[in-house]
Image (cartoon, rainbow, N blue to C red; front, top):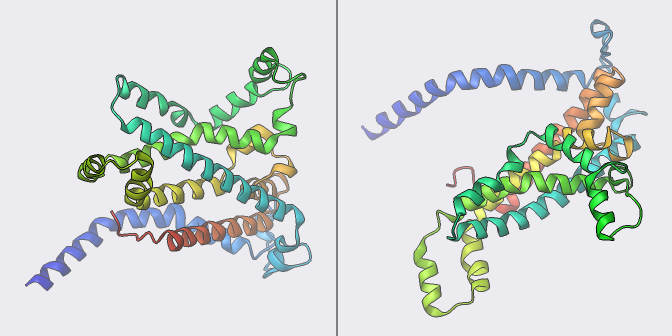
Amino acid sequence: MADKLSRSRVRSAWVFLAPTLIVLALVAAWPLLRTIWYGFTDTSLLEMEKSKWVGLDNYTGKGGLLHNKEWWQAVRNTLWFTLLTVSIETVLGTIIALVLHRSFPGRGLVRAAVLIPWAIPTIVSARMWSWMLNDQFGIINHMLLGLGIIDTPKAWTADLAMTSIVLVDVWKTTPFMSLLILAALQMLPKECYEAAQIDGVHPVKVFFRVTLPLIRPALMVAVIFRALDAVRVFDLVYVLTTGTKDMATMSIYARQQLIDFNDVGYGSAASTLLFFIVALLTILYIFVGRVKLGDK
């Protein structure tokens, strides 16, 4: 009887999931498969019907991605950006979440205010910061000159492009990490902290021995989500640097090949590699963090 009930529940679950799976197949799986297919052809945006099969030439050929210095520069830019932003945002997000988890007057208002940068669309915040970082009329240079920290205006998005991009991304996305970590903190049992307080354990030891191990699964999930988003970064870098080759990410490089150079085959190959890199990072984070998909 129990087996029949279990099978009935599984069938019901598949019935309810079927519409969602069909929609995902139409809007995600099919375009992905087409992109992978184009990566093995010499398709041009202007002559889509005249495409020819070229096999692995777009990947391993003489001018393929694996032999292209600009592609590897884009890969390095993307991975370096991901490492810096995720690391900084995880540390700052944890600190902010710990502060917001404590009771103090106006905590609700502060929580709402912290989320404002995350709520602003990325393209809007990128344009806003590009004006603020402008070397001629930007308010950042004006403030630093007034305080005597710098002697001459800095071209932040040119001379310090990666630093500027990382700082802007940290400003925008740290609230996302704080929100996820705060949710984990609010689920922790109070008995552990009451026992530690009675025993007189130092708060720093309580954090590393009690809090951090308990929020570790949620923290790893937050890191995974943020890392996947960082690897796919496009709009923030494109607006702040106008897509220059030195600061191009993998997404920007793929877009340049697809749109600017009308090379659908080569651009699709770059997009396919980006997809597999994202998939590899997902598997790596799950393996290292030992996060199971069924964990709650």
